[in-house]
Amino acid sequence: MKQNKILFYAFMGVLLLNFTWTSCTKEASIVPSESLGFEQQFKPKEDANPIEKSLFNDYNVWVRMDFNESREVYNAYLGQDVNNARFPAQKVDQNMRQSAYVYMQTLLSNVSKVYAQQVMPNEVFFVKTYGHPAYGYQFNVIARNRLAFVWPNATYGAQPVVDPDTHYYRDSVLTKAVWDNLSRMISDRITEEIPGFEKIGKPYDGGAAFTKIRDQYFIDYDLAKRNRDWQTLADQGGYLDAYSSASFKDEYAAFFKLILLESYANINKNYLEGNAMRRQKYDLFVKYFRDTYNWDIQAAGNKYREMLSSFQ
Image (tube, rainbow, N blue to C red; front, side, top):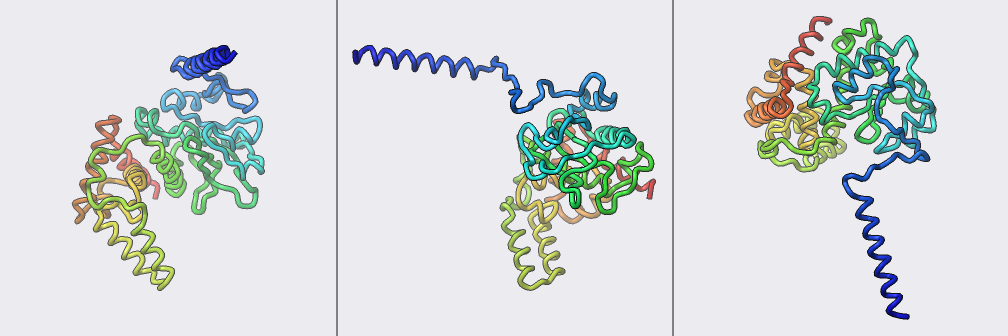
């Protein structure tokens, strides 16, 4: 009897092991659960806006506007915005949809397709309202893959959409805010550091020096001193700015946004002249993007600054 029990448990163990192995093999197909509301296919519909389909095919970025219920906006695949899900999101008005598509088309035209396909978040979800109706968000990051984007945008200082074809260049407040969100999302998604980047200048400290200076301000309330100390921290450490002293990902996001939206002449004047460590980081950053993604990211920044200046 005892021997039969041993044989039974041994058989069940082998059966369980076999089930686990077969269910975790590379070939196993994972089907979305209908009860969770996951879509079977992650792509635009056949009758979607032509720009929506072309951006998805070229950049692997789904610029979305349609949904049946708010849950589709607030519940991303890798994260959920439970708090704001209490307030139903509204769809972008029909007469404003084309301008939103054109805005994203212009934005992505300044990005390498290889880079976008490999690194950028996959979803930009345009909505008319997001969150509480009295103090809703203009942008909100849901997990690492979805940016909720209110359109038309009402960020402080943002301009009305007069010419959709040039709005990306005209409205610098909006464009800087968009890339501030996207650059931080991208820095959280990158899987490797730029070789040799961290060895230039002082090591990152997790924000310890930055926080110490900030806390001192709440003691003496000397704003000028705080700003000088932050600038000294950046200059002596070879960081792009004081915020970047915390981690490589913080400095990656800062460099990415700066170069993408600023000319080399201005970057050189305001950041690189007189600081050899910062110049080495800049050179390595630009070279890495050229070698890895075949992308002259500084050319995009030069173009943006030139276009912006023409509208000012």
